[in-house]
Image 1: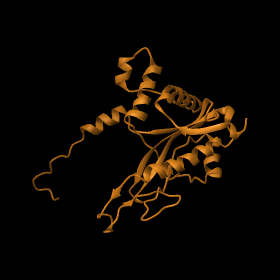
Image 2: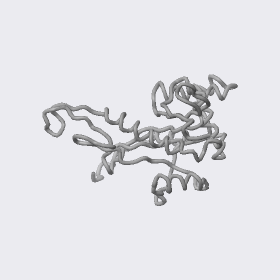
Image 3: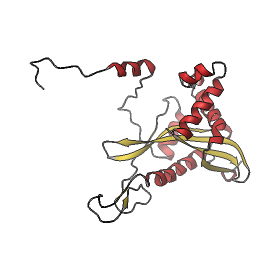
Image 4: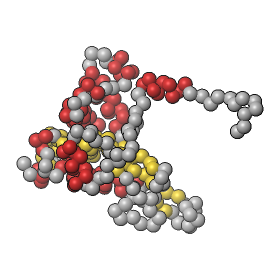
Length: 224
């Protein structure tokens, strides 16, 4: 099968089942299939149907809220799409150091039978287009933007016009044992390892502790 036998498009609510299956396939590949969970509220509502729970959670967070977005690669043509074989799930973030927005790639997955055909690189190419289109509409300011007397848009890269606020980073994490993916990110895309940083996460218990923190009143004689 050649790379010309595939096409990529933004996911729609009708694709939730395919997205969920690719997420499960990725988690299985990463030896963490049991980590695909859903919200406690939906689990209590559908205790005997974990796939339904995950399906509803994914649909809500991608298309109703939405907290994230997804691109899908399909085996087939635009007019006759086949099975979904690739996924890029992402959201936008912000860097206080650069003062610019970034894109965080949460999941990138290509089915084993469709690897080494350029689908991963093509998904990254579509991410670049999405970033340009979405971030270019972030702000329109009139008579307030640096004192200019005409509207300006904050736009992203490739290319930029007027006063650009460029998308300056694409962030992701990769398991240390996943050497094929590490090679892809470093050699094909030019990604830089951030070995000086340690990833950390707070889950339910940690979040509960966070919510209990309050600013304590200083002793009467304490200096500010």
